[in-house]
Amino acid sequence: MIKDIQQKILNLKKEKDICILAHCYQSPEILEIADFVGDSFALSVEASKVENKTVIMCGVRFMAETVKILSPDKKVILSNPDAGCPMAEMIDKDMLVQVKEQYPDYLVVAYVNTTSELKTECDVCVTSSSALKICSALENDKILFIPDRNLGSWIQKQLPDKEIMLLHGCCPTHAMMKAKDVEKAKTAHPDALLLVHPECSPEVVELADYVGSTTGIMNYAKNSDAKEFIIGTENSIVTHLQLECDDKCFYPLSKDCICHNMQATTLVDVLNCCKGTFGEEIVLDEDVYIGAKRCIDKMIELG
Ligand code: 13P
Ligand code: SF4
Image (cartoon, rainbow, N blue to C red; front, top):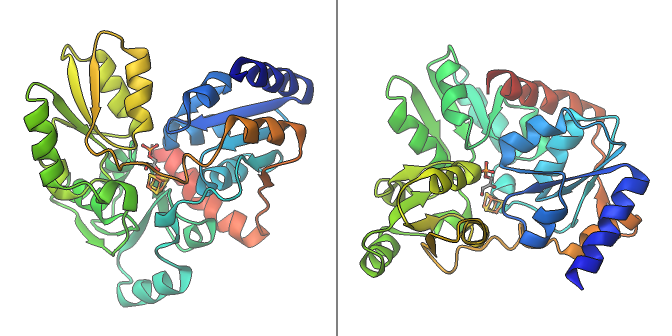
């Protein structure tokens, strides 16, 4: 049944010149029919190179908007219109404008998990895999890092010469994991290495053997000689790693680390997007497009 739907998608993709981009949190059956799978940064780079007329983005809204900004002449479809990122909505433009007025000498660095409208007020975007490189390359030592205070504090620890100001945003899915979850998982699996996403809270990050983006975590686990891993990011990564590495064992840091937005897209949604009966075409106002493009282009250049 799944194979039949996948075949229909592959046929329609070819017939209609569609490219399917999928974030690594998507389900295995979606990853199998995608043209490209990656973390937020790799997807952005890929989006700027795509040649197809239509791109379907299987992920969340800010990812589809990033694709549209990098490929404005293409038809860009968000695979499920309900898939947003709650963190992206945590700071609005008016709030940021007020903070900027109070701290005019700070450069505004925005995690790419933000709305396009908010990006118009920022200087440069970063992703989890490019944040360290980009922040250290910035000439200005005063940085206002929005919206993820966990990613921001992880960067601050590694760049003590920078003064990084944080606000109150975070990813509800990653921030719910605590040091007591690490203690529990380590007691159950004492030989396992702990690999976590920098969106986790500092108390979890401090206990980790490796901190990195979704693909960073996957590459680390695949290349490591260790045999057991506790994974502190969305639980789809536990499944993908277990499918790819039969000789290793993967355990979730918390059974509750599930992003319902990332899991909102089904294989049937993708089929219907290919048919043209589902999904949302991304349309951005000209001023939003121009303002957001400036800091996304800077991210690609510096990242
Ligand atoms: P990556 O940058 O690792 O792809 O993470 C995106 C994201 O939304 C993680 O929650
Ligand atoms: Fe947003 Fe967190 Fe879901 Fe990533 S896991 S899309 S940051 S809510």
